[in-house]
Length: 234
Image (cartoon, rainbow, N blue to C red):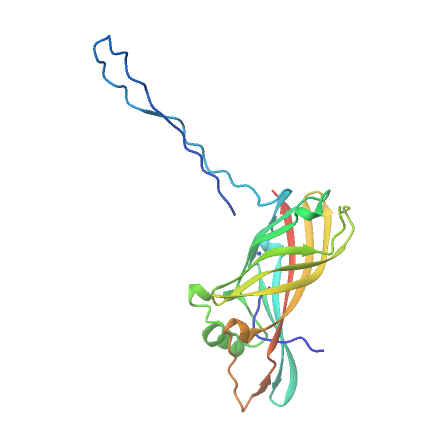
């Protein structure tokens, strides 16, 4: 089956404590004394903690990439179109090699305004008419995991493992549940690498692709989203 569609893809918490101490009054037998002003205890700085146990791995923007893949009929010939967003993926992965049940992908974002294909006319159509990435509300595709399955109870450095990552994908302000399938490799104690893909119906996200009968006879209704990620422990 062909892989299809014109979108691409294919990633945070605070605790605040405040204490307030007040002085008491003098005994009644003594002349009233002026109340000392209340003293505030030092305000603690917000502390960010991962939502689950494990180390936080930051996605390396320079080494990660997202893509979409679409099938179309262009000028009477079948064509596979690939759009790539390089140096545009950010986010975090929480991982504990000794207990993979704590794994989590959070705040993963892909800057869709960087998507490029092999055709400048197509690129313009993507950014101006299809994804409308000039509008900052459409600029990013976002994903956060709700469940990760397929991993063993613990992971060994150097071994690759199949994985299914389910979560919420948001494109153009519309959120849908999707599942990415792929592999993940703990390359070292401080480095993770992974690849995953999913197929979506882009119309479910409110994305519409223009048809130009003289050139583009047809475009499939689904898209394959792929992502290659490198993440480094902080």
